[in-house]
Length: 76
Image 1 (tube, helix red, strand yellow):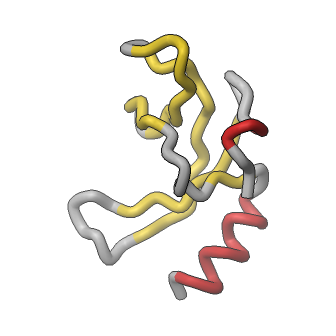
Image 2 (cartoon, one colour):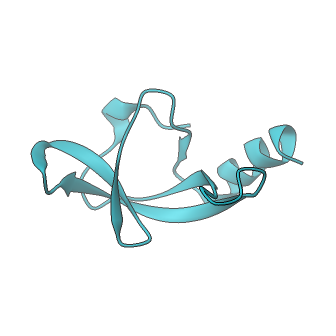
Image 3 (tube, one colour):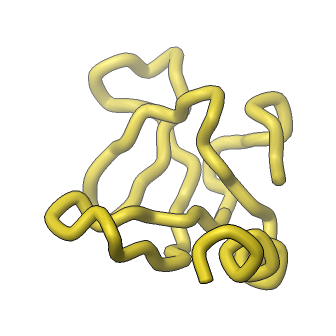
């Protein structure tokens, strides 16, 4: 997993995304690290054309494979 200090604007990352409409459904999704348009000093995840604030407990990965390994351990 990447720490908040490892993230840079424009970086492609992978996250385990929980469907807000069906909480029991999670997938691995590619996202982009971007400046939050409402708070340009903060980085956010650009996912599905929405900016999501990055939180301390977010599981953010550099590769799909590393996200998949954790996904298979905890979700499957």
